[in-house]
Length: 223
Image (tube, helix red, strand yellow):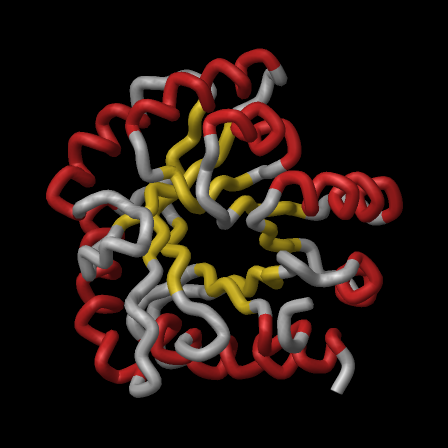
C-alpha cells in the first residue's frame, strides 16, 4: 500500500476504537529518518502533523514542505539538547520531550525572542526505565507548577513511552497510570496525552491517548 493508504488505514482503526471511548485521538505521522517525498504524499492529501527527532535532518524538510503547504504542524519528539533548543523552538509547534526543569527558562527565552507561545509536553517515565528519558511521576506536580510560571510556554499535557513488549497487554497498567495522571490535571489547555506508537497504538487509544505517534506502520522501515 502507499503511504497515504497506510495512514488512512491507521486513522480508521483509531476512529473505530475512539467510538467506544470518551475522547478523540489524533494521529501524528512520525517522519524521522524518512524522505521528504513520502511526507509530501501525505501533505498533498491533507495530512497536517509530522513528528521529527533530529533538528539537522528536520529543518530542510520543514522549510520545503512549509513553503508548499499551509497549516502544517511539526512536533519535536527526540531528546531535547540545549545546544539545539533555539532551533527546536523556532521550527516546531509542539515539543513532546521536555524532561528537565532547567530547560524551561531557555524555552521561554527563545520563544519570547520569536514572539511565540511554545507548546510543550512533559515526558514522564512511569516504568522508571534507566535507558529512557522522562521525569518521575512523583515530581510531576512541581514540574507543572514550574512550567506554568513562564509567559511564553504553554503546557499542553504529558508524553509517555512504555517499555517495549511483544505482548502489549503487559503495558496496559502503565497506560492506565499515564491516563490517570493526565486526567488529574486535564483542562482546556492541558489537553494532550501523547502515548502509543506503531505496535501499541490500539491499546494506547483504548486507555486514554489523545495523540498517537506512528512511524513505521505509515512509512515503512526507517531508512
